[in-house]
Image (cartoon, rainbow, N blue to C red; front, side, top):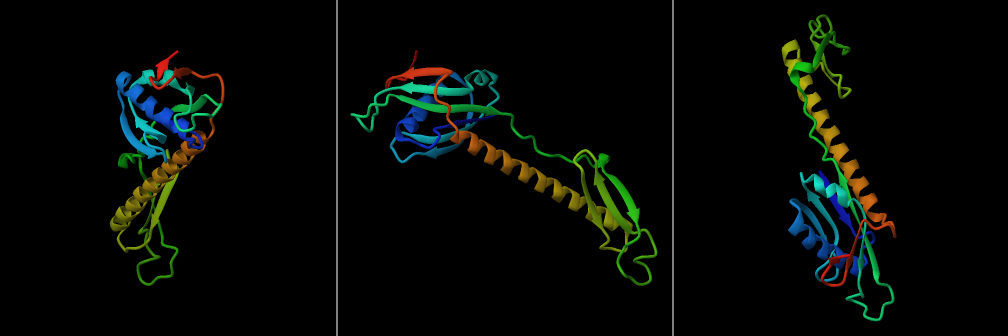
Length: 196
């Protein structure tokens, strides 16, 4: 699963909270850091992206609160700094099982001479479970067109995978900007970042 930890709009104090929180997580859970977006302040992160198989992280989903005096603005009245923690299933890569590809032959719709539109040399490759299809009329040989159509089908599957990943990344980014204040899953206090 992918884990996104976000400071919302990146206030320095919340970015510092994310820095503390990452260290707190490292002691208690197993994960791999995928991406860190550094903040302007020293020892701070705007957002963190983790990859993990540790299902106990699911219990941390929601808003977290760090109660502390601002380390950057000593006379600032606010002491509550909220950040979000969300988990998403990792998008599995799209695989095409060549045994499930359905091939259909047809005559070429192109204007042609002796051979192109007199025999069924054109090929349509269909992969029903993903709703993908690809055509090839490029060659005179049905066998060659079958290979070309399969190649185009695989390319379409890669494009679909990329499109899905991009939309998930956009959703993670949008979700990270929304920080709910109140109803914190965990509350941490002070520079020791102790759970209360």
